Amino acid sequence: MKKLLCALLTGTMMFGSAFGAFAAETEAEPAGGYKIAIMTGTTSQGEEEYYAATTLAEKYPDIVVHDTYPDNFSSEVETTISKLIAFAEDPEVKSIIFVQAVQGATAAYTQILEEMGRDDILLISGVPAEDPADISAASDVVLANDEIGCGYQVADLANQWGCEVLVHYSFARHLSYETIVAKRDAMKATAEGYGIEFVERDCPDPTGDAGMSGAQAAVLEDIPKVMEENKGKKVCFYCTNCGLQVALQQAIIDQPDAYYALPCCPSPYHGFQEAFGLEATYGDVDGAIRNLAKYLDEHDATDRFSTWALPVNMSMINAGFDYACKYAEGKTDGKFDMNALQDSFKVAVGGDIELGTYVDADNVEYPNYLLIAMEPIDFNDYLD
Image 1 (tube, rainbow, N blue to C red):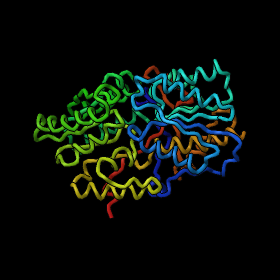
Image 2 (cartoon, rainbow, N blue to C red):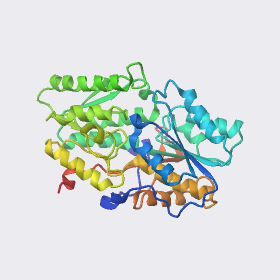
Image 3 (cartoon, helix red, strand yellow):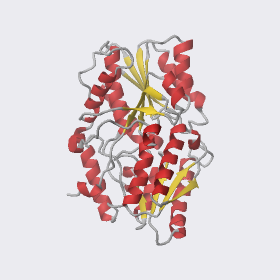
Image 4 (cartoon, rainbow, N blue to C red):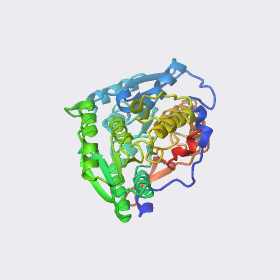
C-alpha cells in the first residue's frame, strides 16, 4: 500500500552532527549579474524559511530579492499572485523560489510563462499547498516533505510509545489538499492497524476570522479537554498547520500522558523555540536539538516528543538558491537536473541526500515533484 501511495527514499539519511553548521552556503560563490527572487511567509507561519531567505538576502544583496506573502493568504490569493508577477517583471530575475508555495503559485507561474513569456525563469515550489498535478505542471521543480511517509511515522511512533488514542487536528481548507488527506488516511489506517483509536478533531483555520491567536487559543483549550475525556490513556496529537504547532507543544509539554510525534513540517525549529522560549540557533542545528532535548528532559518529556534532525524548509531555500545560481550561470542541464539538485542539497545540509518522487494513489508519478524524508529522532540521544 505504501508503494502505491508514494515512492519513499531509496536510502536512509543519517546525518547526525553533520547539521552542526547548517547555513546558507553555496558550492561556489555566485558569479552574479542576475537576481534570484525568494517568496516566503512571515515569521507567524514559517520562521525558519523566513530566516533562510533573509540570511541569503543579507549575504548576497545584489542577487537575492525577498518578499513575503500575506498571513491571511487563503483570502488574499491575488496579493500573493501580484507579488510573484512583480518578481517576473524584472528581467534580471532568473529564478523564483516559493516556500511555502501557498495558493496562487500555479496561477502566477502559469501567467509568468504563458502571458509574460518568461520561459527563461526557473520556477521552484517548496511545501506546495496545491494539488500535485497542478503545481508540478506549472513548476520546474517541486520540493516537499514526504507527507504520506510522515503519516506512517506518526502512527508508528504512537504505537512505540504505547498510545491508545491518536488525535488529528485540521480544518476544511487543509482537508481539501490531496497530500494532507493522503497523509491523514495513511495515519488513520496505520493507527487502526495497531489498535489505536483515531480521532479527527476540528480546529479553527488561522487564516479565518479568529486569526492565528484565536486558533492557537482554541487548541490550547481543547487539548486538556481531550486528556480529560481520555483520562488514564496515553494520547498522541498531530496538527496539519504550521502556526498551531506552538500551541500544541505548549499544551502537551506538562501533560504526562500527552505525546507529540512530529510537527507538520518536521524540523528542530518548527515551533519549539517560540513554544518553550529557547534561542533559535539557526546556524547550529545540533546545538538547537541539544537545547531542546535539555528542556524536554527538565519537563520529563524526552520520551514524549520527536521531530527530524533536518530543518527541511530551510534546506529547500538554501538548496534551491544554490541550484538557481547554477541554472542562471548555465551550469545545469536545463531547468530540471537531478544530479545538480542532489549536489545542491548536499551543500545545503552537509551530507548526501536521496530525493524520492511523488506517486499518487492512482500510481501516477510526478517526476519533478521531489520528496524529502528522514527518520524521527530520539531526544535522549542528544542529552549531555
